[in-house]
Length: 167
Length: 106
Image (cartoon, rainbow over all chains, first blue to last red):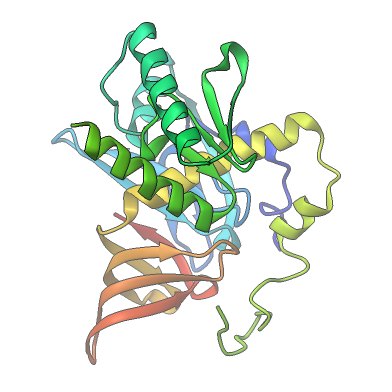
């Protein structure tokens, strides 16, 4: 493990949203805006903006990093731009009442199918299935989270089928 | 995922000295764990965005190969790619060891 890999996550966080120059082994150099640093491999994810509005992403693996030099700070506009690159797709926005209706309809359907479900979180907007999977608004397959991939896949399939039947 | 023992690899597929295992043992403050989670989530979204894209991998000794990004594993041991272009032809599917990859871009 090199010095870069031994840094703490709080240290790595200070590089996010900054323009950096990364010196890697075998005399490679990479420059770009830091999107994130993977805490598992200490790899740096850099974004470079090309002329045609496109973004090129480069990932430098942690084990190859020798030195990281901060060139400049990103302003608010740049931070916004960077956070949008990997942002999940904007789903159709529902009003609070519609969201509540969707939540209750899904909750009822799950209970009818003998799947234990409770409401969680501030204002009870998150559904919790069998204590191991959570569903956030707007309650589609993409909003399911779980650390058990088998349950995740099953529930996503169920919800997908449920939503299709609703159409 | 069991790979043949590499020059500096643990054939168990995970290394007891890996960052992930160290983090699992604890010793992080709440703030550090929060930072770790936020950084990792962004990274995972990045991997999801890479999937299916033509990617150029920079390997050691100046070797560069093109392939279509498939997936990465949890312990950062290997990358799975499709349509790997090598001097011997195109491999439909292949694994690239993380220890051999210096950087990749898409």
